[in-house]
Image 1 (spheres, rainbow, N blue to C red):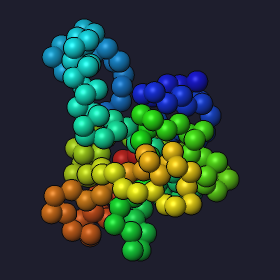
Image 2: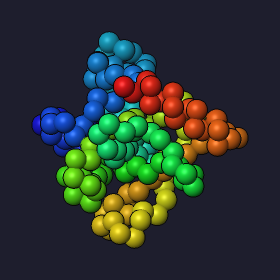
Image 3: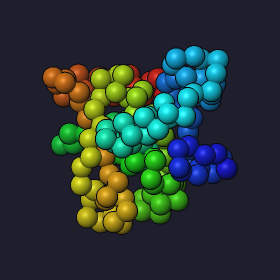
Length: 158
């Protein structure tokens, strides 16, 4: 099993390696990349994450289809809080063969996206509705700019 945040992810095909900055050095800190982070820094990070939303998100997609494609009429992409929800919580509610990609909030926000909590679909289990978010356009991003940014994200996450 691979652990990401508090989620336990099987090493099977439902999980894709996050794109962006890899966690190659799990003990690096911004203050000193060669040492373990100060425990107080970790507590501060957890506190900030609680105020800002999830540190990581899960996105459900179908094999062979884009992971980050905006459909007609959608304003954002549905995602779930990876700090709370495991793949085992999510996948039974979607089509057989659905897969997940997990991305870090910091990586997505560095690309101009905003992650905001939204109500999940009424057909989803309560735990998924309570931990549903959307990746949306940041700042004054137009729909066309948002779609272009999603396309770049898709290309970077191949």
